[in-house]
Image 1 (spheres, one colour):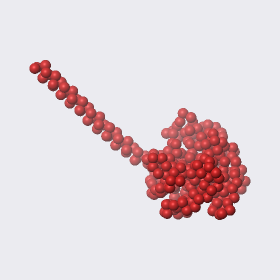
Image 2 (tube, one colour):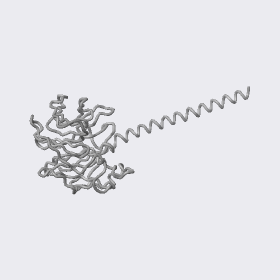
Image 3 (spheres, helix red, strand yellow):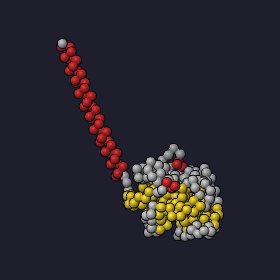
Length: 292
């Protein structure tokens, strides 16, 4: 009897200790989860002002250009079409075919002319893209599929196209360059206008085993007022603000819950910033962003 009573006490003590440890562990996990949530919220240096859900045909939207209030030119990476999309009507108001199926990654527009970048570096020039009699030509670059081209924009002030590789550059591994194609000559300039140092301390959180993957541009855009260049990195979920001399002025960390796969960036004429996301767990969308 005495042995049985002692055994029961031991069992009760063991149960008490186990329950106490479980409760402490649960409390610590709750605190950790709360802390992680705080970290996610406090590291944001941007806010989302508006969200526009894109239709199914733009589920793989890969590039956007702001045209006018509520209207964007969009491409998706499997079809040689420019889709003119109205966010207020939630509808595609025009569909312009310029090529057969392919891997199209970005679009930019200069007045009535559109330019679309294919992943192998080939650029389609669609003159007078709004008309019924569009004229299509091609601009060749030194890039190939190994460079994985996704970024193209028009620099209005200097009347030139700007592009940068996502992966391998034409020069040194520790440099990611931005190149130009003057509209007048439509000839690729092998001398970069900007060289981004991938060893910069401002890119430390993105350091990769392969230095060239420290920054993997998925889109670029020029601010219409400041002329600063914005580089979007979908893989590392970052947005870089570059001065014209290539210096990284500021880095914005993008929350994965807001940006499932950011592939397109554009500014309105008054400097409103828009970023598009391909559909992943969420629907494809265009977000209006306000940076701090």
